[in-house]
Length: 478
Image (cartoon, rainbow, N blue to C red; front, side, top):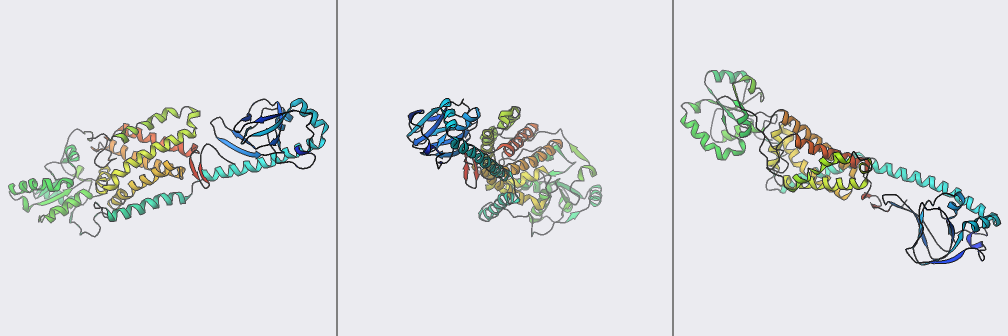
């Protein structure tokens, strides 16, 4: 099935003598005249009106080929080759056609060598044009699938700018680097701390959250969590007053994470209360082997339901089953579903963390894998990155780059989850501020499902995507 532009000369439709051939038919606008894939029976010449020639895939993606007007014809290729129609034709407006049967068409070719030559020339032109169009489409698709550094710079740069500007005007703003510009806190070496303990000249103060302290701490240490300092300090100070000689002893503050956030902050707070002999343990993670330790059976971190985002998080797990079905695995409609779902999940998580970056920073500290200089900047930028990338996915903007960033975020989170599980950390995921689910292998499974969704988007997303010419929907003009 093919169609031509309006022919000229005696070889065109205008020069054909069709007085004794075929029959004249009237076709209302919107009528499908021939359908792709059907057996060829007739050759058509347009006397008035216009028609549209198009191809359509099994999943409904339409490719418009051309429009034809009075004096042109269609249907000749299928009759010449004997193959099923290769395209469909429908009337754009009320049209009058001359419908010629296959037998009459063969007789017409025998009597009109110029028409046969014209058809051959047109078929050759279509082959050349088809090759050019195919090359253009392949190049176009390759460019759509390419990912440039600009895509990442756009999303990450936008996220960072929004984070910094919002932090300036946020009532709950935090410094970019925690403790920057503050005076240092005295440190004590491991050996000196051991000597003071032997001489009964040291009191150990654990700055971590109570769940960590209950699980493991230096024997005889007191727990004074930073986040509850104002609430618990009066009792702590009362205990010191009731202990003979306590205020003359060295208060050795220790924590247990690479960020040093808890122990250094607590030491500064104690010094601000007028306590003189306050130091932090220099080797932040050696206390569990250098001093007598009290341990209890590890407990899972307390968790709270995440609401609708928590329910949505279970959907990615079902993707494991869907990817086993090839037609579904490659479906662009599944890509749209994955994009909308991931975008909704990450936007909902981002909004709660954007308003309270200090809370999220403490959740980052709990994982114990990030140094102090990176915690606050991460706590500021990551929620905005989740928001921006989530919006890009939903809107169909640079979706392949957005999918890779979502996958990277999930992989980093999975690493943190696995580390917390293996070290029996009593924490929750920290997904929505203070609220979060317990860290366990089910949480790892959920995030692995999100990574699979990102891979599906990366490979097969091509529907409702913002292109240079606008959004690509079901109809695609080549």
